Amino acid sequence: MEIWQIVGIGLTATALSLVLKAERPAFAFFVVLVAGVMLFFLILDDVVKIVALLADLAQRAKVNTLFVATILKIVAVAYIADFAAQISRDAGEGSIAGKIELGGKLMILLMAVPIIEALIEAVLRLIP
View (cartoon, rainbow, N blue to C red):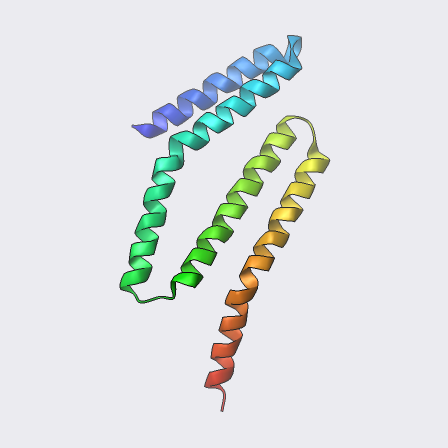
């Protein structure tokens, strides 16, 4: 089961990081960083499957693929920004983490504008 791999890598990296943090803080950070990248690549296949499933469902439901693609990009930006912010916090840079989160939120808002615009236009067409 894949969850055991995720938990195993996470707990091993946590224990190793705690041991190294006292003697070599820089190495502890790299352990956390490498573990995060390993976990990301471990779940990447599942993410691809989910995206393919959602694209198939959207196609069968005859939903505009532009909207589905935009929503998937928004979700990706949210996860990437959160991942980067967590790494920055682990490195003790909470201020940078906050800026990464703000940048991610602004990117999400920017990407959502076409969907909001289409929604407003649809509502206006309904109003006589």
